[in-house]
Amino acid sequence: MAKELPKRSEIELQNTWKTEDMYATVADWEADLAGMSAMAKELMGLAGHLKDNAESFYRALVLNDEIERLAGLTYNYASRCSDVDTTNAENQARVMKVQMLFVSLGEQCSFLVPEILSIPEDKIKEFFGQKPELRVYTNFIKEVLRGKEHTLSQEMEALLASAGELTAAPDNIFGMFNNADLVFPEIQDENGEMVRLTHGRYVPFLESADRRVRKDAFEAMYSTFKSYRNTLAAVYGTQTKASWFSAKARKYSSCLEAAVDRNNVPVSVYYNLIEAVHNNMDKMHRYVSLRKRLLGLDELHMYDLYVPLVKEADVKIPFEEAKKTVYEALAPLGEDYRAVIREGFENRWIDVYENEGKRSGAYSAGVYGVHPYVLMNYNETLDNEFTLAHEMGHAMHSYLSNKNQPHVDSRYVIFVAEVASTCNEVLLMQHLLKKTTDKVQRAYLINHFLESFRGTVYRQTMFAEFELRTHEMTERGESLTPDALSSLYYDLNKQYFGTDIVVDEDIAMEWARIPHFYYNFYVYQYATGFSAAVALANKILKEGAPAVENYKKFLSGGSSDSPINLLRIAGVDMASPEPINEALAYFDKLLDEMEELMK
Image (cartoon, rainbow, N blue to C red; front, side):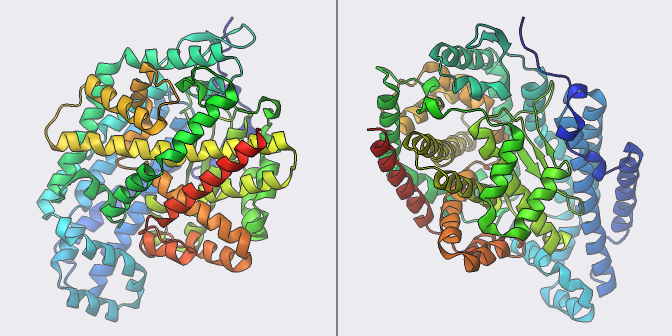
């Protein structure tokens, strides 16, 4: 009999996150939805009058800010409830309700930015001089003015806002399909028992010492996606068309330019990443060769990439033990940092285990005025322990930015989002390595970190290159057919993994299961963030207190400056390819040690 996932109602309360910290009742949530609508009407009443006086200008900014704060709170509540049980119709209805309201609010508030841009800058400076309370909106106004070239008329902004529900549809459709409707077959586990393949169980199956289990899980995963290849190609193709529609409407030359400009990141950073990784591809190929040799395989296959190279050190890590280890590893960041980590562990910030209908993967969601929420599907592996450290890094970034910045400046941009999370991972790795001189244990840990490099720098850059190429195809008017997508993805795998691995045909369908392809040029930031994090973690461990202080200034910065400048405060310059080259030089050094240990 197959082992099925527990229902949501069967998960112990202590292992679920505390959504009541946002709203005690659904009625309270409904009240804030109504409050946002009322504020939007008041804001609309100011349309055409922002230039009249400083008071009207200020009131409009306050209303807009409060609507956005409540939008974040109401959306987080609906989404956090839905993500842990996507089969619950009431949860789904609340998400759709808040999304529909946001489209309406977007239409009503769409006049704001164009009207601000219509006011002479001297007049705005005059308002700031007349009303000191406006200073809190200094960065907001600076960003509005920076986007002047790509901001449309009030009528056109309203039209684009009304299209928001349509342009969000591919992500919503894929999410429902992937999390709620898609059912994988059962496979036989190492003990001969039939177990349902799920998103959460997939990687643990690939880590199995039994190669038959790895192969069965791999083939079951991709044969399932392949049976929906036409539908999924249509959904993803619509996503790229939606991106191109929005980019053209805002007078950008490409989807990439539109995406990175939102975060005030130069396009050159994206191309620098791909070029730097291409220039260091020999290191990735060297790792693949080492893996093949250490596993003693005549042929290395794609389903052999996750199995630990050092079987003797492969142990189960209960969640309580993982929390304790992560807490110890973060000691270099100071007791004030760890006190917040402890609060999160003890006060149900984390939704721990997989259940029926729960969203796959892991994430952290910051909620201004409340606390962050961390979703996991914990499976007692070393990788899951690192995921805990990773997501608590996100949580701390949100917590410190929310605590130290006004709401309008609290939300850090995606470009810096992966830095704090990966810095925690590097500190955890260094902590674990310091705890052992055992050659087998060290090799096991170094292999895990090598896998982090492979998965975060190389793999995410491969994803970024796929995303770039597919959007360029759409911009040229080419169709993203299932064959075109699979062929492109297969060729990229051959380029990135080299000749010492059999690039199985099934891997050509992997593009169809990556949720981040619906996040509009998100994935490259994993690779840039990882590179920055390696540099910062090394600074923290080498320099101590001064580096920690600068790092916390970065974590507390929110969006108070450009992401490039905030990272410079912390001590790295991502406008240069050097952090990526430095990170991959460290990868090379780890390969040397791994080869030495495994002689």
